Structure formats: C-alpha cells, structure tokens
Length: 263
Ligand SMILES: O=P(O)(O)OC[C@@H](O)[C@@H](O)c1c[nH]c2ccccc12
Image 1 (cartoon, rainbow, N blue to C red):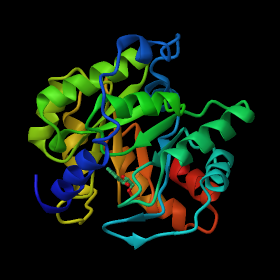
Image 2 (tube, helix red, strand yellow):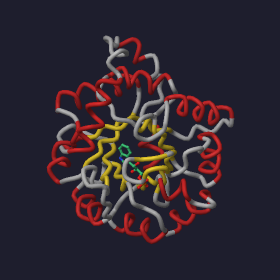
Image 3 (cartoon, rainbow, N blue to C red):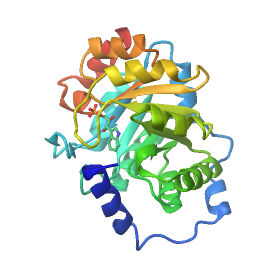
C-alpha cells in the first residue's frame, strides 16, 4: 500500500476515533430481518450488465467533479435510468460526501417504494461504520482489501453479515484477488484505478475478472465513461460496472445508464 491510500486510511482511523466503541451483536442483527444480499441479488438478476451509479462530488484524482451536487436529485436521475444499485460516497474530506447523503437517498428511495440497494462507499476500518451504514439504510459496504489486515477484513465482514449487508471486496491485483477469494466473497470488485498512482486501465478488469469463479458477482469499477467501456467490461465477464465521474458529468445520466446496458 502506498501514498494517497495510506494517507486516507490514516486520516480515517483518526477521524472515527471518537465514535469507536464496542458494537454489540444485537445492534447489528436487528437490521438483518430477512433482507440479506440485496445488492448481490440485484446485480446477479439483471439481464444486461448491471450498473451501480455513484454519487461523488470530488475525488483526490479528479478534484472537483460537481461540488454542489444534490444527492437526491442525482439519485432521481439514476433511478430514472434504472440503475441496479447506487453507490454513495460518505467520506467528507476527500470525496465531499456525508452519511447525511446516504440517509437522504435511502429516504427518497423508500418514499418512492423502490428498494434500489445502496452501497456505503467509504474507507471502512471499524464495525461502528458498518452499524452506521445499516442505520442509514445501506444494503452493502466496501472492503478495500489492500487497505486492511486479514483480521480487519474478517471483523468487518462478520459485522456486515450480522446486519444483513453485502460486502464488496475491492481488489487491484492478483494477490489481492487471492486474499479476497480466501474470505468466501459474494461480490468482488476490480478497481481499474490504481489508488496509488490514479491511472485507470480497463485491462486490469480484463485480466482479473476471468479468474473469478462464476458464482461470485463481479464488478468492474472506475474509469468507465462510454458504452464502449461498458462493452469491454461485459466482454471480460463482469456482471456489473460501477460508474462515478462519467455519470456525474453526464448531461443526461439516465440516458448514459441505458447506453451502458445496451453496449
Ligand atoms: O469515478 P469513476 O472513475 O467512475 O470511479 C467510480 C468508483 O469506482 C470510484 O469512486 C472508487 C472505487 N473504489 C473506491 C474507493 C474509495 C473511494 C472511491 C472509489
């Protein structure tokens, strides 16, 4: 692990320090109520390539993407385009998001009676964040394999399982794929962006996704802007793509989601 990701993880551990406390099993398990695996199911059930549409205001690599973005308005576009899942950045310092965005979007989805599953996109390090995700109505959390020890990965996964949340294991190398596969994952995401150097290359999905067993849901993440990119991910065998910047910058995000699915 190096530079930016190291910096972000160090910051995250400090940022949550005041909130960390023992999280009891009962606190987590009251969210599980028969609704486990909503994101993995939605991605698997889609006939075309599934689309996870991300709400992201800025990033260390792109800078400001859309500083004043209204999370609920953006979610409305994504739902109109029939996104299969939403990814909501809740990190404030580096991505301009908040837990409040997640609460607002899941409230909006609930009011519409449309249970599109939401991923809490953040740098998870402690079970308290899993509890926060469940409370805010998320269906899944992100686990960045490179950023966590095996013990942390196991601890976070256990908390997510108790709360009925899916865990998306994000990888960026063959070695990380091995680690993820040893943890019995339901969803593995290949991040095409090198989190140390910020370059994206879909060739990484093309190299790694074919090595992932069929019963695991696969996601190609980052650097997808066009129907052609989505087509490459599908050709590589991805069940889903995760798209942020391309959709946030799009004039008509709903149309772009349809284009991804038709590719
Ligand atoms: O905006 P893009 O290039 O479409 O990428 C989306 C998503 O993959 C990216 O935001 C992301 C992937 N893994 C992360 C981990 C933390 C924060 C953000 C991310």
